[in-house]
Amino acid sequence: MKSMPWCAAVALVAALACSGEPPEAAPDTGAPDTPARTATPVDPADTASWSIGITSAPSTATAPPLPVLTALRAGTHPDYERVTFEIAGAPEGDGAADVPAGRPGYKLEYVDRPLIACGSGDQIFPVGDGWLEIRLEPAAAHTEEGQPTLGPREVEVGGPLLQRIYRTCDFEGIVTHVLALGSPNEYRVFTLASPLRIVVDVRR
Image 1: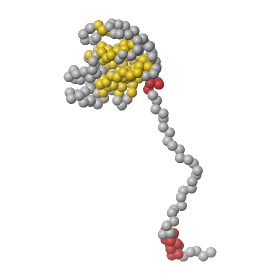
Image 2: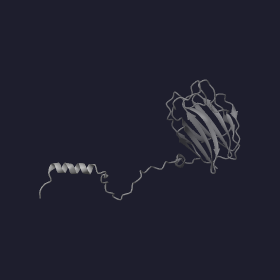
Image 3: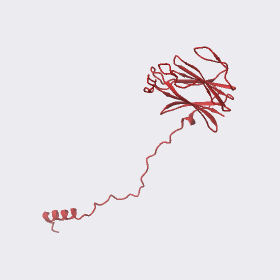
Image 4: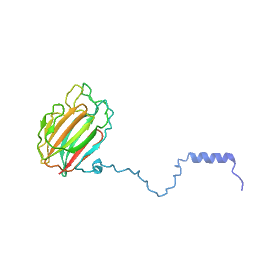
């Protein structure tokens, strides 16, 4: 068999290139596209243990600056009452938050009354029949100029379980609140991010 002259081969390649025919597609293997698997996020509340005793965790803060409590919220859910402490970095004079300084350590336990206000030593006789104390350290509930960042020291909630919240201390890097409850029920504590929060749930 005679070989094709090289000039004829060049002409044939050029003709195919100009024919407008699309290039041959890669063979279809029939395998469907597999979507990337994403891990299901874990709800921190689901991993927190319910307790009636003492619960504590060490601080992750690198003071100074002190972590500052910027909001205190209480909410009602079908099976529990929730109290949330929102935390930011140390506010400057104009009230703007600095870089978050980490999470204060916490210790939770049921205490007896009367409660003692730190600094003044005044006695507080809370309502209810169960008093859950939440101690945060290092932390502050005021600016460097001494302006409070959480509002009044006593908050009326008025629920059958969570009745009032007392702030008994905001002094020398310690902030303490007491939840006045209708009864000393089980509770759990966990943290949430963006913004940083410490959450306390009390079972109904």
